[in-house]
Length: 624
Image 1 (cartoon, rainbow, N blue to C red):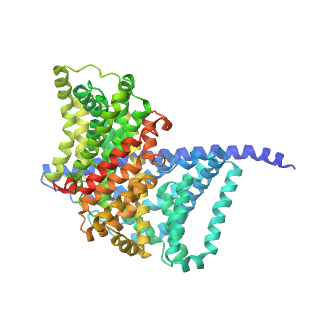
Image 2 (image 1 turned 180 degrees about the vertical axis):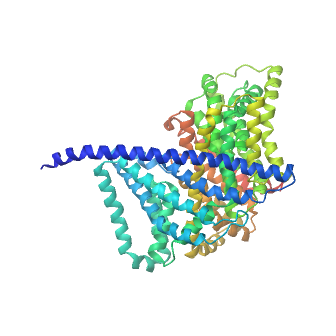
Image 3 (image 1 turned 90 degrees about the vertical axis):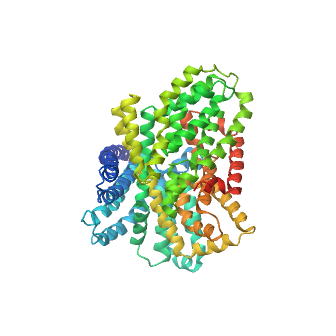
């Protein structure tokens, strides 16, 4: 039988296999989405019940935090599976767009295999970790912690299934074979080179945590899985340490109760957009300054400043503002590329505005007070906003050919009156934390209830049909973020155990220029890290290592946090690698080519703002 005949007879079988894989994939996805959406809703109810019972009824429910934490791990792991199905995990796609299609297809197949290899590596250790946790009893709920820890095993098993099904759905036999040969060959080389890797000492860290991570990220492996496979491979090949410790560290990273505010604030941001709060805020700002030359650019910056203080999600921020302003800005003569550049830079500016996910993450992994971070983040963002206003003013002389009509005093008052309930939301959130009504985790649910009441009773824009998609979107983003935090926590622990952290401390402490040199190098390093890794992975990986160094050198932890977050914001939205830049272009429906060169004046302004924040610590700590 000829090769063509064999291929022709294999094609129908391969097609049937693909169709079967798709059906199973969809069934698993539906089950995970429904259960996960219910868990998100349950978390809101449980946390808000804790607030009401403690503050209103003066009869605290002691089991709410433990139950919320119990469900949170299940929410995170199911969200991880949903994000894998929806391609929602953070990844770098720049290189794949540069190479020919057949090479990109090979990259995608290798990336899928890497995901499968990682989840298979974790399955056995996850089972061992479950055996350990079965004998731990949860104090308030009085049940075994194994019922919580089994979520990791279930999530990993489902992820392995989804990754394999997705590989069957999207690849050809040829690309699958090439990918299998590539991954298998690299694995065999590493296995045979074990004695050399052990003898290399710190050199093996470069192999696993620089070369392998960089290669995985470059070909499009989701960042969380790149971290995970590097950590598992490093420990299994260079040490005798039980790999269940890695799962333990992942669990510790994902189970911090402070991180439960991540899905709550994401849900709040999406709910705010649905109920029209963002729209009425923007309408008020437009009535106030929209008539001046370049005024809508200032409105966009002001809207991002206000909206970021509510939603905590950059994608939600941009999606709430861009559709409202971009059509009118285009009508007035603004270049589409300029709009995307302004949207991206305003998102970078607002990274330190509470309650951003980055602030919550950095507080949870470094034990810095989240309340202090919320207070310290406002002025640094204001400095960055002023810098962007200067650039917008200069460039609007050429780009904004029409000032528009001045709103009447009556119209300004009317739009302000409509926007007042929404404008008070950031103050409600902040007051709830400061007055002790709710913790930093619970306060998001106060915002959710407040937003829902505004949508139902004030703005009359509450589409019940959109609640389920919003819950699923919250679930997916939470799963993607939590897996990064989990694998990066394990990776940071492995680096610490190797002695790398001690070396890093000694190196950073000996930087020329003392504290100033240390801060300058940190700023440059995190601009680069933010561009390649995005904010959250870089923070989780390097925050626990660098914050002790900063403290030893006399740098206030909140000041250091603002430096890191602003630097990473610049990197995240800096082309050609910053994925936030491409997100802004996608939301604004603008070609990245149109916005690429228009970003640099705004990035330069943000760099100046960063230098000012570094040089003037009072901007970060003056109101603590």
